[in-house]
Every structure is written in C-alpha cells, then in structure tokens.
Image (cartoon, rainbow over all chains, first blue to last red; front, side):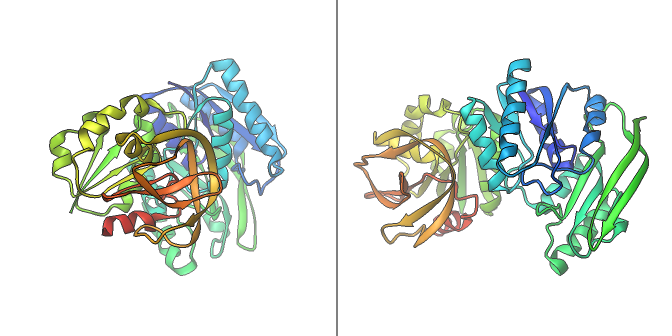
Length: 224
Length: 179
C-alpha cells in the first residue's frame, strides 16, 4: 500500500514511520508547520528541520503552514492529505497518535471522508514501552521542548538515551509526568535512526526557557 | 487460563492498533494471538476464552469470511467477546443483522440491563462503519443514542461490544476475563 506519514520530526512520528515502512511503500512525509506553539494537533519545536530528516531518509516531503487555530487547522490537514492523494496516489495515512482521542478522531474522520486507510501503529502503547522501543530500535532523539515541573533548561538538547529514560521514568511517580511526554511534557527531534542514511549534526542551537517551560531552537544543522 | 485473541485485520500494521492494546490488557501467561485465517479448530478447542479484536474503518475483508468464523466458533461453548468487527462476526454466526452505521469518536453509552461487563452511563471510543440491529439471538445490554453497543447471546456466554473498550474502558475487558 502507498502511504503518507504525518511527520513532525519527533520520536513518535518517526517510530510510526519505521513500523509502516516494514510492509508498505512510504510515498511521502507530510508536515504541517503550525504557527501556534500550543497547537492541539501538531507538534511544533524544530518543525522546520524535518526537511533535513526527509532528505536523510530520501523521502519526498510535502510541507505546508497552518495557523494552528483549533478546528481551522483540520482544514489545513485535509488540504495537505489531499495534496498527497493527488501527487502520490496514496491509499492511506500513518500517524504517531498514542492516546489522544481528540487527534485520532479528527484524523480518522478526514481519512474516512477521503476513503483512505488510517494507521496508528503506536495507539495505546504505554509510555514506558514507547521509550523502550526507542532504545531497542536505536532511534536517537533529543529533547527540543519541555513544559512541566521539574524540567530545567538542562533538559533541552539532551539525548534520550538509557540514562535519560531512567530519569524520565523516575519523574513519573514523583511529579506525575508522562515519561514519554504524551501530555506535552517533552517534545523531541530525531537526529539519527535506522531509516536515516546520514545522521543530523546540530551545530548551533539556542535555548528559550522560563518557569519549567522551554524549547530548543536549532539555528544550524547539517547531514554528516 | 488460556486466552485466544483472534485478529480480524487484513493488514499486519493494523494489528499494532487493534490487537496489541488488547493483548497488553490480557495479562494471562497462556495467551495466543492468531489471525482468523491461521486459526485452527485445535487452537479454538484449547482456549478457555476467546476475544475477537476489531480492525480499521477501511478494512472490510473479514465480512467476506464470516462463514469461516461460523465453522470455527459455532461449537465453542466457553465465553467469547467480539469487539467492533468481532461483534459483527458473532452476530453473523447466528445470522443476525449487520447494518451500515458510522460512528467515529467519543459516544455516551447507557447500560440498559444488569450485566457482567458494564454498568451505568459511560463515555466510549467508537470507530466503525457497521453495527448490528434487529437482533433475534442476542439481547441488548447497552446502547448509545444511535446504535446498539453491548450485546449478549440469549443462552450462551457470547458478548459483543461495538465500541473499543481497549481505549478508556479496559475494565470491560477485565470484567470479561473474570467471567
């Protein structure tokens, strides 16, 4: 089946892509750049650098902008999916949705209206299992956003390795955070993974942080 | 207790979404997951309970193979739970009616009769293009405004759930496992 992947550049959409690529042809990646940092639908930090990830994986990539206004952004999602239908004759969409009924319901409705399959291969996966899957699949990602106590600015730019995973899990009981960031506690950006032909080297970045909330702005990066 | 999970997904990728979450809830050490086309009479006969899992909105291939389920399951006397497409399948075994009915998203379900799976009113995640109606062999235990949501066979321990209990209603699967 020819599939398009809703791709934010983070660990979840990458893992969904990797699972989908096992048995299916990935026709293109679809990225919506939200102008709203608090979008209900779309992951935002480092989104402009998804082009480098697509280049490394040698996938076609459709990027479009969305205002990020709740519900209006669904029209933009519909449009980008239609672009993939027209350009690549895709038969289905893949998402990295895990637990958000809000996200999955809206994507399912758009796919159903367009007679497309909708695949959510991470659906209902536990936060711990997701983190284990990142490690076992050798997916290297960094933290590009934090939005919960007790995250300090030291977490920004940190690689999600086994030590980091242990710390995230330990924060679950103490602070009630979702260790893989399902509640928006952390955002991530994949810099190397099995589908990458070349890893991404981040040369320069800048932290924006205040009161347990921050993001890593990537200023310069290249494929090694 | 030996639990058999039957997949109705024609695409392997769908199983991550519709079978794996149920397998996570079913903690039995003796748990087997088989696609219905790989399911044998022996696998069925050794099971203590069977769960028939749902599949994607666009996946209707199982509807062509309902006779296969009749052959496999009609003599199985222990509890069966059919989820979404699985509910349509358990109804089709008895030739009860399957109808077009699109529901995508959260719905309110009201329990109508005391039963072992649900009680009261609750929110449920629904995603299907077909449901069941005008049942002769099943009683309706719960329904939403638009459609029948939970059923039980009149004389056997065969249940059907139209929504997806693996999302936000895991207790229903736990309750089935306790029967």
